[in-house]
Image (cartoon, rainbow, N blue to C red; front, side, top):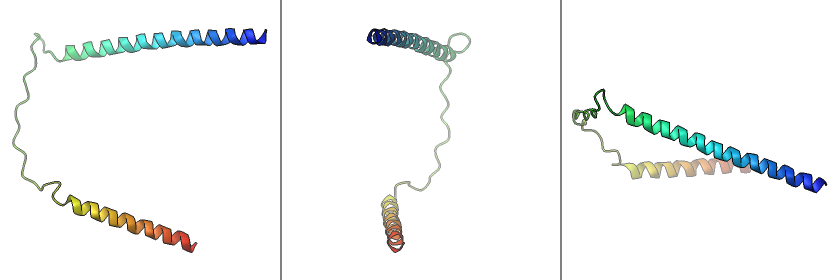
Length: 95
């Protein structure tokens, strides 16, 4: 009798779980549909025309190249990491 009750209880919870999954999928689908329709609606201006493209701004100012000395930065990071590791190892061995 207890075994039968456990089976019925398990089936009940599986039924509820499956129902909730379907309900969550419906809610998610509704939310996605509303979001997509909102985005599509906001892309048009009053009379249904697309907004004009943005105007080109001034050219970027000349600056320093970002990756000119990147290898030196990596080397410094590796040396600093090795130094800190050696320092921590040395500190542990003295304690």
